[in-house]
Image (cartoon, rainbow, N blue to C red; front, side):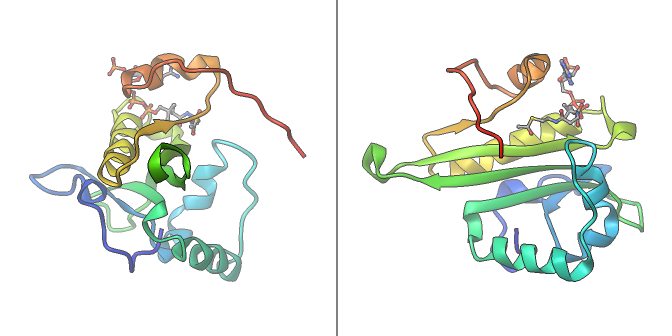
Length: 166
Ligand SMILES: CC(=O)SCCNC(=O)CCNC(=O)[C@H](O)C(C)(C)COP(=O)(O)OP(=O)(O)OC[C@H]1O[C@@H](n2cnc3c(N)ncnc32)[C@H](O)[C@@H]1OP(=O)(O)O
């Protein structure tokens, strides 16, 4: 998400009151802070050159608050290495009187930082942003092994995920 867009309050979570973790929106310079290698811990994510990263960043910025990528960093670490990330995509529908649905995507915590509650905090922030945006629900796809984790984030089983891969 573009750093030029106004930050939802929930995206500015952490970083105060001696909180060792700061959660904020993705910045263009996060290309140099391990964002792509972090995503590669989730799925195939070949490196992007800085111009390629900038092009995609600019494309996503045109979606304003309908596409939010949050990252978590150590508040006190000067290198500001990215420890965790998650994305919220807001789908605008004709259903429900022009309602909106939040989609949580691409949640990943660096292997060395797991088990510290970062994943929970990132997802809770995304859900809060969706609520503030007026979404009537937030949905996501995950493997059965992650059901317990997302249950702790407040999600319940609903329907069946299906896919066509190309
Ligand atoms: C929509 C999507 O993006 S699905 C893809 C999700 N991402 C991945 O699978 C990438 C690889 N995995 C990861 O990055 C991490 O392990 C994550 C994101 C799944 C969890 O991040 P963490 O920061 O380790 O989780 P966190 O410490 O916040 O755990 C929160 C709670 O969930 C539990 N939990 C965490 N991971 C799991 C799991 N795989 N299975 C069951 N429970 C889990 C924790 O025990 C904790 O419970 P507690 O509060 O009772 O102690």
